[in-house]
Amino acid sequence: MTQTNIEYFITLAETLSFTETSRRLFATQQAVSKSISRLEEDLGFSLFSRNSRTVALTSEGKQCYELFKSLKAQYEQSIGEIREAYTNTSSTLTVGYQNWLDFGLEPSHAFAELCREIPNLTLSGARYPPPILRDRLLSRQIDMAIMYDTFYNSLLVNQSLCKKHALFDSQLLIMVSPDNPKVKPESTYKDFVTEPFLFDIFEGESIAENNKRAKKIIEQCGLKPKKIAILPNRDSAYTEAELGRGMVVGAEINFLAKTRILKTFPVGVEETIVCIWRADDANDVVEKYADLLLAEYRKRDTAQ
Image 1 (tube, helix red, strand yellow):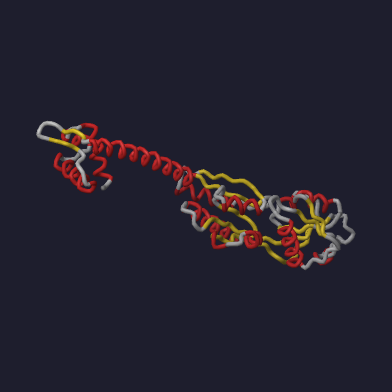
Image 2 (image 1 turned 45 degrees about the vertical axis):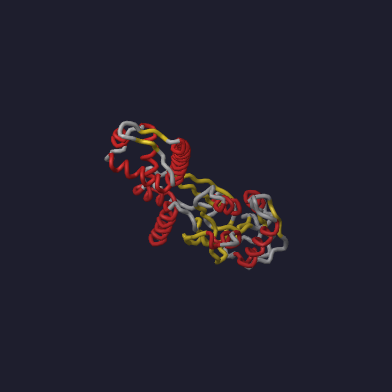
């Protein structure tokens, strides 16, 4: 019971003419006749009553015609919808970026390179905090996330769900108000490790996750803060630091640090920025973009 046999049957049921059927399907009358016979043999009953002059559907043939016609329509509709979804998916690359970070021109250069191979490709991007990036990636709302490796490791419990490339490293900085009395030409980050630690909470982050993240940064940077102040967002934390209420810790690629009047002190610790995508993603455009992205950052590192 092949698709070809069913197609021949439907056409013959509508024309009731072997001559017209063979013309429409660009087949010989003999091929049409054999196809119908095979289908009747598979079904176990006759679909047509025919003699030298006429061809007519049997009652069973009429029922099969309605059935196969309906199935064909459903098949064509479903295949059309699947094809349209595939076309939309393969022609659009959706990337989520960790908010507040400056990733440079490399994402744009990698996309331009990819467009040489896929001219009609569209890039769509938006910024989110790490927990939202994770949720959107796993729910297939974005194709790729670019974020700190620290957050990838802590937020994604089952890491076998994703693939990743380590793109580049960024130095961590302690940042304080320039009016802080400890700020001197010879000062280092060690002079500020006991300052109050100004820390933000991410959208979508639980209190337990926030505490774990704060503890990790404190250990990572060797901090011994007098107290920890949890602020509702990163902007608030930087504002409090400018007002002399304590210190914030951030990567040098954090563009908030570049727009604030803050003194920065390298900690000697680096954060790795990664791009991650779903391991089961059938859209090979995503992995091609990831490879090009890695190549662009390596090119930048070599130039430096």
